Image 1 (cartoon, protein in one colour):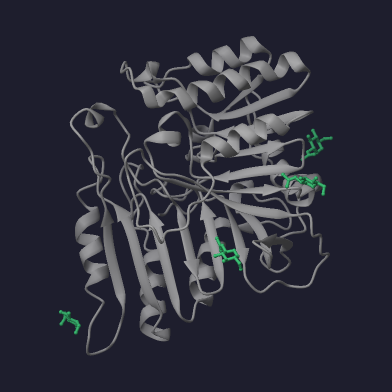
Image 2 (cartoon, rainbow, N blue to C red):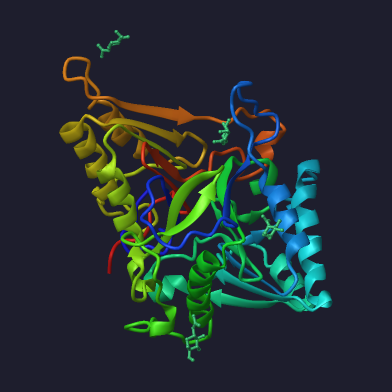
Length: 384
Ligand SMILES: *[C@@H]1O[C@H](CO)[C@@H](O)[C@H](O)[C@H]1NC(C)=O
Ligand SMILES: *[C@@H]1O[C@H](CO)[C@@H](O)[C@H](O)[C@H]1NC(C)=O
Ligand SMILES: *[C@@H]1O[C@H](CO)[C@@H](O)[C@H](O)[C@H]1NC(C)=O
Ligand SMILES: *[C@@H]1O[C@H](CO)[C@@H](O)[C@H](O)[C@H]1NC(C)=O
């Protein structure tokens, strides 16, 4: 969790107590999950629709246009040279995507500048099928990455969350996302973010200062949009990192800190890795903004903090002492409650051969007032 100027902090926030704005009962938000194969939870846990079924539904719904913002594409298991039966869901999604252009549907894909070792087969196949792909050179533009994962369907429905365009995100990795149906106002908002990526994906593009007024939003921390979650009124806005914020947008870090700061009872956080530092910059920098606010919530308001992060083969060694330091805040005499748990997906020898699988990729935060579903889970680059 981290990265002050990182484009990775793009998230969607659902608040329990809505500010009265225009009410539209057709809006519907649904939580979507991927649970790794053979991982089972207790009977009392609430099953949510799968990422696969949600993507298939959206593909069945689209009539005019599909915009996808993505980090990288590995929808078949060619990248791992394994023959995993569980790759079939990813392959099926790709097959469906390849059909869309023939049916007159406009398919636009914004993707992060490829890492040298990642394959380009899927993106090439999509281009051959008629989709338009823009590669966004975030390392040059913001020293970050386009870590966003969202779908926009016909300017009406949207999907946003942790799942990459990766077959593992459907069957091997624990993911959490939200699908919002029949919500053209929020889709318009996310559409503006997509248009910003699209513009930045033109070769030689630079970040406009300021962004043109048509990239702005009216939904933000002060004035969220309303919708229904399971027949409960809720209010929603999305946020983005500073370099990508046109007028009206709430900045990603501000959103995270405001959710923590508003909590009076509990803050539950789940992230793939947790470091009060930048993670991918060289040199790494100390970046304790979020860590400080969690400690402050415990110390000043006796908020109960529960952090669930991952322990897997790519966890940074430096993470563990920082986690111990956070857990050390808990104390029976002061009654400070700070629980730090590590999540390990059980892996068999065969499964262990799949690289970058078997991990909890969720990036979300729940308090007694709000739910934040994000795409930032890992440290980002330092501020420039
Ligand atoms: C969107 O709203 C229409 C009209 O109310 C309804 O028929 C349709 O089922 C809704 N779609 C979804 C995905 O909820
Ligand atoms: C804003 O206007 C410019 C210039 O007309 C256009 O290129 C861009 O796509 C527009 N952006 C959005 C989000 O509509
Ligand atoms: C949705 O609402 C029903 C009825 O109030 C409740 O039983 C159920 O637990 C809720 N589901 C979720 C996911 O909140
Ligand atoms: C705090 O109290 C609980 C329950 O009484 C006990 O299990 C735990 O060991 C105590 N922790 C410390 C650090 O004393």
